[in-house]
Each structure stands twice: as C-alpha cells, then as structure tokens.
Length: 220
Image (cartoon, rainbow, N blue to C red):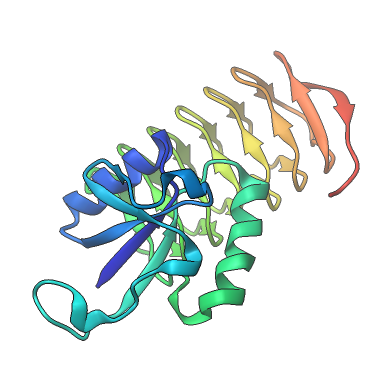
C-alpha cells in the first residue's frame, strides 16, 4: 500500500515514524500551504491535494498498488473538514486503514474505524469502540466498554476508566483522567491535568480538579 500523509507538522512526524515502523510505502506529503509545494519535509516531497501524481506506474518499484491518504492533522475540526475535502476530490483514496504503533496494546475484541492513529504505549481494553479519524496519543489508556466517537483526540497520558463515552470531536488534554461511566459531550475540550468526575455537556470547555465547565460555545 502506498500512503500520502496529509499534513507537514509535528503530528505528521509521529505518523510518519509509525508508518516506517510498519514498513508502509510513504509516497509523499500533502499540505494546503502552497508555499510548501515542491519542497520536502522529513525527506518526503510535499504536494497539494490538487496536484497529486496519482499514476501508480510512475513510482519506483512499479505498480499498480492501492493508494491511501492518511490525515495527520491534530486539530479535530480541521481534520473533519479535510476528510470531507479529500472525499470530494478523491473519495476512494481517503484512508481506510489505521496506523498502529507496534508497542500499542489493543485487545482483540476492539473495533477501530478507518483513519485512526494509535501511538506508542497506548492501551485499549476489552469491548471498547474507537471511531474514525481518532487520535490516540502517546501513552493514553482506554479501559473496558468505552466508546470513542469520530474525530476525538486523546492527548498523551489521558486515562479513561471503564464505560466512558467521548462524543464526536472532543479533545482531552495532556494527563486528563476520567472516572467510570462518564459522558463527555461532542466537541468539548477538557484542559490538561483535569479530573473528570461529572458528565460534561457538548460544546463545553472544562478545567481543573475536579473538572468544572468554564465556558460553552456554539456548534460550528
């Protein structure tokens, strides 16, 4: 499988590293910043979505082989927007695979939807469900029966106890801890180091120990 990585940032560096560890064929990078086109990042050429060289036979080693675009975009709402953009341009190329670091510990029962990245030392326990285009960042843990919806980002060191439900697009900061049975609403933001002991409404920002909602925002 040949992979284009969408994004040329620190997050993309980690995705590239995991791809290398899994012996994937990285064909290049994609970025919306036209000033980067034709340049290189981490040794790979940068293209725009509109000028990708999609002829498999043009690549060294011959073809044809499947081509995937993996979204290495840390911001949740931007990642969702770009997923739609890629679908509009090249629907069949949006990543249908997941990128999983070899050190991750994932129970055999786990269902992970397309386009999710699982970074080093992540642990996911039995009967958890992981949506599409999710970021499970370094060292986060997800216990039994959790539900992680699409476009969620669990930052490094986030720890979810059992039966936690994290709504679409929520972002849990570094070192957040969540007790069992909590529901975290869609597109909410939980500040770094927070301890979540009560349900968090959608479109809210919560911080502290215990976490308290400090503001809300309207859906985009």
